[in-house]
Image (cartoon, rainbow, N blue to C red; front, top):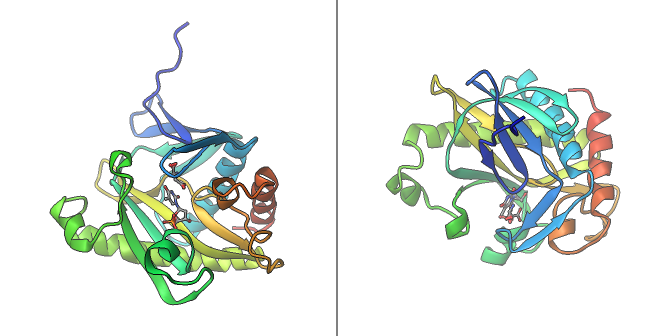
Length: 242
Ligand code: TMP
Ligand code: ASP
C-alpha cells in the first residue's frame, strides 16, 4: 500500500489532497519553530490543541459572516478545508505593542494602541518574512489595491470579533497573524489557523509579564510551561459557545 501523497509540508502543518479537488486535509503537527525556524522544538499535544482552538474560532467567525476555509474536524489533529491559493502575505493586527513592533519602533511592551494597527508581511521564508510597505506590496503584485482594502477591512472585522470573544475568556488579544487565500471562484477566504502559535494572548487574571503569557512566546523565549499555557487557552476557548 502506498503512503498518502503530501501536497505541502509547512513548519506546523501538512496538507494532503482528498478525492475532491476543492477540499484539502490539514494535519496539525506538534512541531514548533520560531525566528524563521532557527529555533526548533516540539510542544506535546500542540497539533490537537491548535486544531481544536482554530476550528472553534473559524466556526465563530463563520457564524459572524466571515468567509473561511474551514469545513470540519474529522480527527483531533485534522481539519478539512476548502482548497485555496494562499496569498503570499501575513496580515498582522496589533492592539497592544509587543514583539517586533517594540523591537522596531521602541514602543514599550504593553503600550495600548489608540487604534488597531494592520500590517502586511511578505510570506517568504528565504527573505525572512519582511515587513512590507504598501508600495512594495503593489510593486511585487502580491495583491491588487482592491484586495489590500478587502484584507484590511476583513482583518479589522476579525479583530473585533476575536477581541470580544477572548475578552469573555478572560484573555487579552494582544496581536495575531492571519493568512488569506482565493478559491477557484476567486472568493477571498480566511485560511491557515488561529491559535496560540499565531496570536499573542495574555491572561487577564495575571499582571506578571511572564506569567500572563499564554501563547508561543513561552516557546520563543524559553518561559517554560508551554503545553500548560496552550491547554489553558484550549479549555477557556471551548468553554465559550460560538
Ligand atoms: P511579531 O511581533 O513577531 O511581528 O508577531 C506578530 C504576531 O504574528 C504575533 O501574534 C505572532 C504572529 N506571528 C506568526 O504567526 N508567525 C510568524 O512567523 C511571526 C513572525 C509572527
Ligand atoms: N513561525 C515562525 C517560524 O518559525 C516564526 C514565529 O512564529 O515566531 O519560523
